[in-house]
Length: 127
Image (cartoon, rainbow, N blue to C red):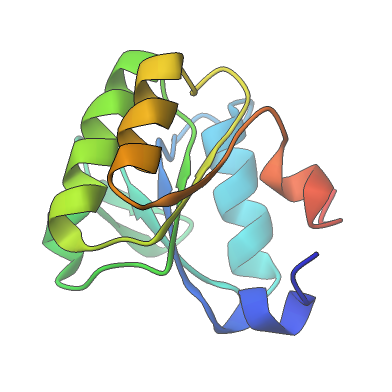
């Protein structure tokens, strides 16, 4: 298991951040931000959530995050994997419901470390 201090050092992008407080994209982003994690939010509608700028895409960040967490439908995750490959992202965590066999295969074939079938927040003991 990864040391929590190591995760605090990572640049994390949460793809699927939502303005709706009942959605997991909002809850994950809020918990990470309040916990002092270096987390950025990605949503094509951009704007601002919790006082933080939200980016339209991973490419708009201007750097490759160390970890991408997907909280989107699996068809979107498949496109996100392609973007991660182009940017040189090395690790993707697909939240339950955002994964698909195609997304997992694309990530593995691109040499990206992929975790799926597990909630990031529960696995890292943040919830």
